[in-house]
Length: 328
Image (cartoon, rainbow, N blue to C red; front, side, top):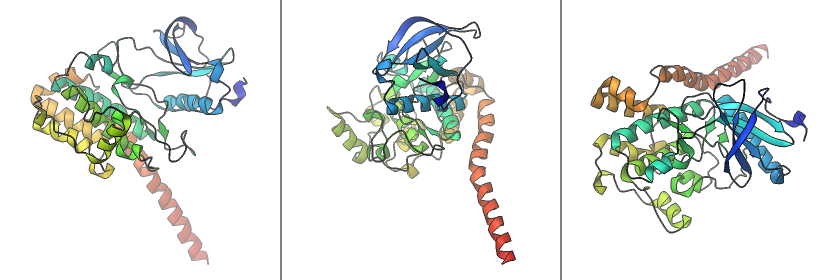
């Protein structure tokens, strides 16, 4: 397989593979080390048996390209990729402290900690959205604990790149995990944006606090029908210890229509963080969320740049049209 066909910048870092730590239908994951990195990493290798499938290779390459654009403490770190002995690979942050799914299997999470996790997830989502990335598969098994006890968002395998000329999925194809899918994902709406991730965040928040997802059924069709048509029962109506503001926020995230949900992940993060500060003080809230106090301010400038760029382009086009008109 020729590296000249790669659409990402191959890493120059050398890795030594260690023990296998995971496997899936298309790839296998190894613990690895490098003399150029202070910490061990995880290496994901695409299986030779699927390396000839252009769709699978395309998805693998696009995940690497997406990860190269993201740099956030609550998103899995990327160390580059390439081809090793004919196999595609990429190196990423090694997370060996379990997942949110494993934690929730032990029981409900007290609302202050659930809100703190929600702040971390929302911060990660905003960073991705600022870079044109919609995750599309936010769920407890894709949220991993780092060594400090914070959550890290991983697995961007079916993420949507808003800046790409084409999507990895065919138009009209449903992608996601049915317990956490937004209504617009279920109906394969072509206009899916970051609001879909906010709905999934609502599902995850609900499950953390209530101990079960907002909708359940014996098969995906039953769950999908509820996502589309049934209003979720409020957390407090379930008898869960939860302040009214958090209950209202989770229901807001679970609105059927995208435009009825919060404006952005940043708005969700800010609301939860402010309530935690009001309840526990700034020092207590920071200890719960483990969030860099400078992070939000830095990312907001990113968000403004993304929003402003189309306006700049539009202004240039208008100016050109006016200039042409004056010459005619």
